[in-house]
Image (cartoon, rainbow, N blue to C red; front, side):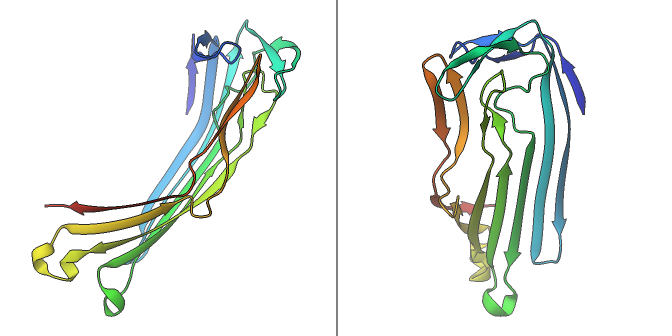
Length: 195
C-alpha cells in the first residue's frame, strides 16, 4: 500500500494530551498473512507487516530532546518517522492437536510476537527498543470424553511466557522522558460452548 493523507493528526509530544497537524503523511508498506492446515493436526497462522510512515510535507519545527528532557535544539519534522509506529511486526502461532491414541481432544499451541523499534518523539531523537514475546497454551474439547458435551471447550494460556520486561512506548517532554512497561506474564483460562 501507498497512502498519502493531508492534515494528519499526531500526538503532540511537546504538549502531552494534545494533537498536532503533521501536514502530509505518507504510509508505505506491505502486510502479509497466512493460515494453513499443515496436517490435519497442525494449524499455522503467521503474519508480517512492514510500515514506513513519515511526515513528507510539514512546516512544523520540533524540539530534539534526549531521554532526560534536555533541549538539544529544533529541527524540521519533515522527513521524520511518526512517533510510536513500529516499522516491522511479526506474529506466528502454531496449534497442534495430539493424536487420538495419546489423548484425543487435547491440543497445545505456541506463539511468537515481535514488535520492532519505534521512535519516542516526532524529532526521532531516540528509539524505544524492539521486543520479542513467547506465548503457550493448551485446549481440550470435551466432546471426546462424551458426545453429550459436544461444543464445550476448556482453554488455558500463558502470555509473555518468559515474563520478559519490555517497554511499549516512551515520550520525551520538557520535564523528561516517560516510558511505559508492557504487560508482565499473564495466565488465564476459560470455558466456551459452541452450538
